[in-house]
Length: 237
Ligand code: UDP
Image (cartoon, helix red, strand yellow):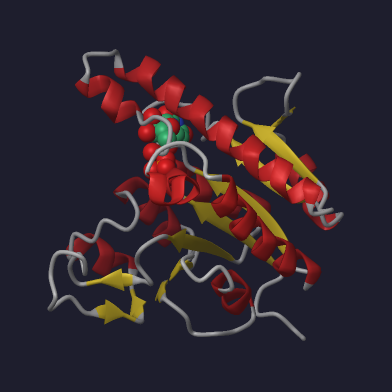
């Protein structure tokens, strides 16, 4: 079956890996998520992944505790490396070749990020997992996803969320009148103050014409549906 996309960047929040526990890495959740990534790879779609680190550490939390922000952000970037290695392990156990590429060199564990090399991995059918954010403090893994997606020529960012199946007018868990949007523009996100992605990331996507599809990963099969032309979730473009 022909897919809608040939190359995608899948952005997962760190929280998604924590599952119901809210902290750390839930191996059952990792198994569920990676099984579906395997299905997408089997369909011939080239997949790159950026995973956050919020299930382990966020720079902002450290700052609130009195730490220097840049140091706290370095810890956040390291958290993304742990999550990336967990995804790598689970994918390879399912027989899919992967490479973790880090923005901060740690060559004993993973390759340094080199754009052309990342593209080559994708062309060979390997899943490329981009870890350690963009390597700079004060940025997020949303911005990392946007930047790397553009660099590797991904056609869209697939944004997997847990607990919500798209972008809503308000938090549907707190406001029963909240309505789901099928389509939004980048400007809508900023004007309506929707917090689906930070503003640095959203303006990057707008300036570089990069569509974002926000969907729920509670049904693990959704990623397969998203790459094969279903109108799931919310499309931002
Ligand atoms: N981070 C950073 N620079 C980057 C990407 C991430 O400093 O380019 C740090 C930052 O402290 C952030 C943490 O890594 O809080 C985890 O990333 P993020 O909060 O984006 O993860 P998510 O919310 O998606 O789990």
